[in-house]
Length: 110
Length: 424
Image (cartoon, rainbow over the protein chains, first blue to last red):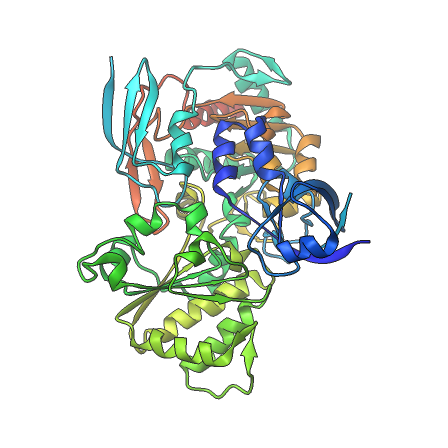
């Protein structure tokens, strides 16, 4: 059973340092392939730390492990990078800027 | 033999910290002091060993790669030149000269960063200042939709929260810090007060703050998830501070309303100057993204999303911005300078780059370079080449190279491509 969440993407220190090591390294892949979720949402959905979840938007879908984070209920965070960008739609509303923050996503455990 | 180079500039982010000390052994940087966790890798993970260019995955001679790149660009009907923001101003000038020569669209990482900030600045103006002024004067710091504790790690130390300035000699004790964001962050944990805004609620909160500053009555109990009384109280403190500053980031430019959010913030900043001194500072990401705005504006009149297709510059965010051009499949070739759109663009735009012949000029073999038609491994400005970059407050900083320049510079490759295009 899927639930609706709001996704925010952004910079993390691990994403930046992984980028310096190279985007073909495990350090980078691990840094950008993780979903932070509110612990209460995790408990309600029966999702434990490290569990793989599927996220879906009209633009695409990804699967990534979950990590508990200090987020408001019903909000997710994924570090900026190719995993998050699978979910970002191409529309820029005439500005050149896609919506990298505030994306509506459907979430379900795999 | 070990050599110590002082006052080196880190080019990772718009802070451009110019007090870095590096130790050089056997023409490699062996140790870095003062750089933050984000910046250390610029020096320690960079391999300055010269490499050969690559055509379709195979090493090639430099002259062959230059000729191939020139051929692709000269034959293209609608070439795109993108990136620029992690290169030096000298190379940015060449990239724009190339765009002018071949009638290309040129866009920088600004369009997926502070492009909406540029639109807001053009609409209502940007009451800003230098970071030095903020360091020495600001007693009220308001961070809105930005997280320097993850993205600009020495900002607090050098320019804002903890910096000791002329009129704020006790640093942190003389300053009040407030954060607006949709989620708690490492930055909000350092603040005196945190205002958690509902997702996409920034515009409403900013509009109400503007109304409160003007003394208007608001018939609401809360706005954007924040009780009105808290906003009213903050308004009073903003008016009474000696020098206030908003630091703003992607939380405003990447969420709904984009440039309209920033317009409200810039207008609020201007209004507050009727009561006290207040400024706003966009937190620029790439080390020389401010320089890309500057150089493109010197040369075309516009800061990003510029087309030279008609023989003169035309400005068109949404029309000539890279994501839009790629998603609409309008570009039939691309030159990417010091950027990695394959990693940072929405999938639809990133995939299009793989379908068209792409030329990459970058110190690192990044995700875009991995599938490029032609890749040029160049030096890294500020590490093994000199150049100029603009800090986030648009102050130009001369970069000194800690290592000798052995790899070609971005500028020299672009120069060679320009000459080769002229011969096509």
